[in-house]
Image: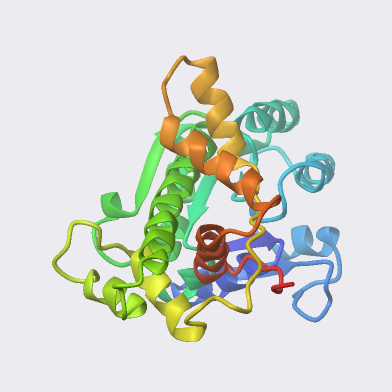
Length: 294
């Protein structure tokens, strides 16, 4: 299979490599000529066999809108666009309608794995018509971890369902990181605790709180035991807000996720060891930038 990939940033660049390692031929385009395989979107389309599959991996919002609009004007009926970025699920409906008017197929795919996906594989949540998901299955199989497909890939439902599932996934992630971070601050505040990094390291096997996030927490403390180099300002990329908005719209109580989102807002107002840890964890799993300590 030969597909196109638009967007070769910290996620897309590694995804291109993993797909190639999995036997998928990939032609990538990025505005940065140092990483791009072709000079333009037009060149990318010309390089692909019909029916074309193009995976879009660019920032959500206006940039994704612009790329999908350009593809709607240049692709042929029967081609397929997959949005693998972090678009809001409501945008998927708009993009699907725009492309369908030209006979172009559309699917959305939530992607989790961050900067470690090249090595470990990506968790994938796809939305779209069953025949479209089946067409792209070799791509999904190349991206996901080895083992049972159902352990790392799901066809969630129709268009928008993949990004909705990823939104909730990221909301859960907010809550988990906040719980770890608050435990870190509480342990750090108690003078009888003399080995704080070792405490978390000892939780990595055999305990009910063991997880990949905990492993990354230990890694962050190994690299910077007191997190002295990291400011406690923590960004939110959107999915947490959308999750809380959906919880309100559907009358579903989500106090942990909501509190974690509000804690990020609070991090921008006062010094907080817990928020330093949340910032460190975001950097560990996703390569998200941290602010230097002031």
